Amino acid sequence: MDRAALFDVDGTLADTNHLHVTAWWEALRQAGHHVPMHAVHRAIGLPGEDLLGHLLGEDRDRSADERISAAHDTLYATYFDRLAAFDSAAELLRTLSRAGWKVLLVTSAKDRELSALRAAVDADDALTATSTSDDVAEGKPAPEPVRHALDLAGVPAGRAVFVGDTVWDMEAAVRAGVTCVGLLCGGIPRADLEGAGAAAVYDDPADLLARLDRSPLATPGPGQPA
Image 1 (tube, rainbow, N blue to C red):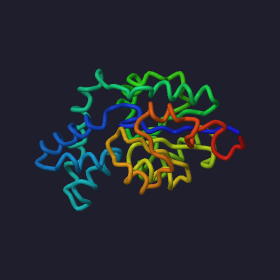
Image 2 (cartoon, helix red, strand yellow):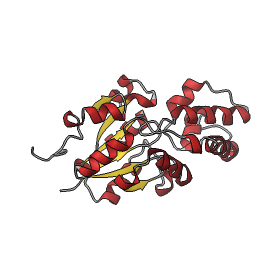
Image 3 (cartoon, helix red, strand yellow):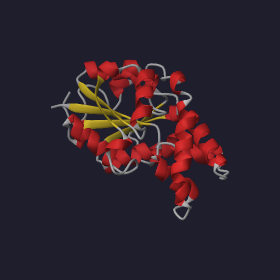
Image 4 (cartoon, rainbow, N blue to C red):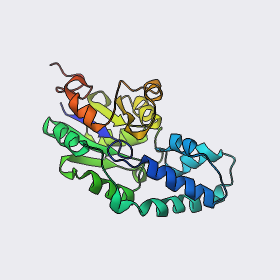
């Protein structure tokens, strides 16, 4: 049977979380909101509207949401030509693809952002498909993005592993019934990832690749006898 390796991108394959923190912090400051950077960091990985709700409260003046999100997008876009992948990110995706995994990206990034991220990771030859926030009604931590990726792969939840760097990634995968793996390179503590459901936690893509044969992504894959 087929199996799917689902990957978040920001903070998981690409070293971009702190760029998002800076862009959101400045966008919020321009709108008169003084939110500590550590709070913004903890919200990274949520779709824009949900991120604003998490940081500003559901009773905020929502008329400013579009302007704040647009400011973030404009600020973040200035980094597009400088986005950097983590070491071994591309090699990890290609190794899994060669081992028979369908490799998919599952991200809260919009299509334009994802194009820049894919260029940074530079492993399109290993990808089966991508799922973005534009494809679903609800983003992480709702399970819809993960379920959409499973539909694209044609693989049941029990034959998939999701790799991400945020609590929202872990929660989305658990709700979709998918084994989840956490990476620390996005800046979220190990205890938080494990508390949200991570079956295993690694430092970064290079660490996961080095220990791949002892990870949830080990061949022959979840649910398949060795």
